[in-house]
Amino acid sequence: MKTDLKKLPFFIVGCPRSGTSLLQMLMNLHPNIAIPPESHIFERFSGVFANYGDLHKSSNLQLFVKDILHDKRIKEWGLEISVAEFCTQIKIVSIKGVVSLLFELYAQKNGKKRWGDKTPQHAMYLKEINKIFPEAKFIHLIRDGRDVAESLKRVPIGPKSIYKIAHRWRKYILAFEEFKQSTDTRNWIEVHYEDLVQNLNSELFKIFDFLEEDRITVTRNIPEIEIKKQYIKSAALHNSLNKTISEKKIGVFKTKLKRREIEIFEYVAGDALINCEYEMATSRIFPIKIYERIVFFIEDNYLRYLFKFTNYDAFNLFKKQINYDLQVKTRKLLRSIKNY
Image 1 (cartoon, rainbow, N blue to C red):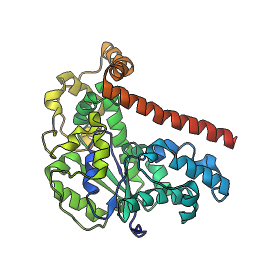
Image 2 (image 1 turned 135 degrees about the horizontal axis):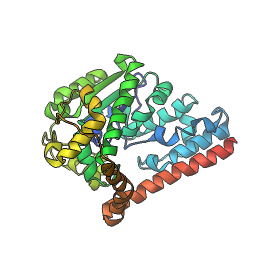
Image 3 (image 1 turned 135 degrees about the vertical axis):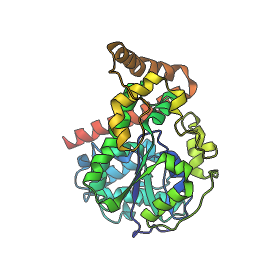
Image 4 (image 1 turned 30 degrees about the vertical axis):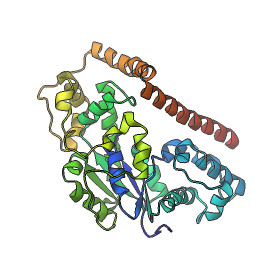
C-alpha cells in the first residue's frame, strides 16, 4: 500500500513515562496510521547530519542510508531492504527524503498510508525536526509530573532522585512551551494523559480531527497488535500496556511519594505544574537542604547503577542502552573524521 503524500507526518513527544507508548498503541489501531517503535533518529543523528556532505554525491548518500538502515534502533523495525534498493526509491535526495522513505517503508510494511513518530526525547529536537519537516504536525502528551516521578522511581531507567526527575520533567514541558511560541497553532496540539484515560474516545477524536483523519472508536483493552508485542518484551518498562486502560494511575503520587518528595518536586517544577493546570499539593515549600542534595547525588550516581547490576531486567536494559549509546558515539567519531 502506497503512503498518502498529502497526509502530513506527525511527531508524538512528551516527557518519558507520560503515556506516549499508550497513545502510540491507540493510534496504531487506526487503519491509516503506522507509528514504529521509537526511532530516536534526531537524537541519534542530530550531531552528524551535516557530516555526510552533499547527498547528491552517490557515495555520501549511500553512506548516510547505510548508517540509517544499520542503526540499532531502526533495525528493530524489521525492514528488509538493501542500501542500493533504498536509494533507488528516494523521491527527493535530502535528509528529509531519506527519513521520509524510512517511515514510509514501515507504513507500507504494515499496510498503512500515513506515518508518525513517537520518540519522547524528540521534544529536545523540535526546532530541528520542524526545520526538516516544516509541514509536520506535533502532538504533545502531558502528564502530571509528580505521577511521572512516581513511575520513574519504579522503573530501571532514567534519574532516580525526585530532584533530578523534577528538573527533567520541567525541562520537557518548557521545551514544548518555547516551541509553541514560534509555531503555527494549527501544527500542534496538547493532550493531557489524565483526559486521555478518563475520556478515551473523545480525546482520540480531537487528535484524529487535528490530523484530519476519520474518527475511530477504541475499547479500553488494547488488542494484540505487533507493536504491542515488541513493547511487552520490555516488561520492566511497559507491563501496564498488557492491562485495561485505567484511571487508577491518576494522582498516584499522593499515596506513593513521601510528603517531602512532593514538596521538593513542587519547589523545583511548581511553575510548570501550574502552567499545565495542575494543582499544587503543598502549601508550604521549604528550600532544599545540603544533606538532601548529597542524597540526590548518591541516588542518581550510585544507587541508580547499583540497581542496574543487581536486577536482571534492569541489567539487560542497561546493556541494551550501552550498545545504543556506543553506536552513536562511534558513528559520530567516524563521520567527524570523514569530514575533517
